[in-house]
Length: 279
Ligand SMILES: Nc1ncnc2c1ncn2[C@@H]1O[C@H](COP(=O)(O)OP(=O)(O)OP(=O)(O)O)[C@@H](O)[C@H]1O
Image 1 (cartoon, helix red, strand yellow):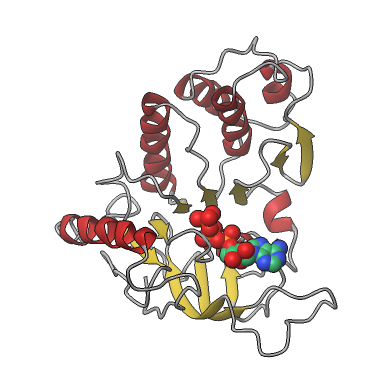
Image 2 (cartoon, rainbow, N blue to C red):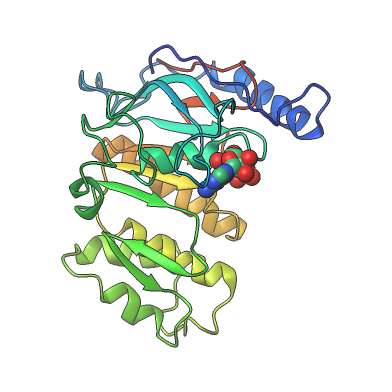
């Protein structure tokens, strides 16, 4: 990861309970992760020269009703810079409203910014939709209660349809990868989606999102409904994807259990403090 300056969240104030929790989490990782070997990444090899994710002096303000930033509005994200290479796994931390989802959505091509500020595999995800439609860039999160977004398609995940139909309905998938994911996520293919629990539905969503071997994965707090075992299996699987295939993952979360040896990098949006690991 290269140098980074992170914008101060408008919601981050001294004494704020969320920030205190966040600082505890950072302290925990700072002491723990700095002891990790510096070669962590793509099978211990040096990562390729070009970063897979590059954020360079990113500033962003949500537009008002006229489509322009309200006059005088302070940017939600201000002059953020960081980059990640193949094989790296980054935790994106910050209190509620700090801008984690916004950054992931910008990276995922859902909000337009100047292409020079955000590059994924050297391309602008907003302008180059082939990045997401090919499955190379995958965003998982957000509106899962309504839809599963997969390779450009939106599928309603609360219809009266079986998990099997949903998962096997995705064409061009490696059957071994599909079987592995079904096993890791402990999915019962006979589940009917309109009757499934939140956690069961979430497993199907994650499975569908991971069917194609992504190169960059953006996870927006998607493990929140999973039980401890499913979450642990998933995190192990994702770590392997980075180590064996050189995938890059950015994972925004408030849940730190089981993450002790997972990330190679941490980005904190809560305060100007940031932790730079294993670069
Ligand atoms: N479409 C939008 N238009 C205007 N403001 C928005 C929009 N989406 C989010 N915001 C605002 O941007 C700020 C950051 O939101 P964001 O969802 O990125 O935070 P977050 O760090 O992911 O929070 P959380 O931890 O609660 O998920 C919030 O104040 C939110 O109200």
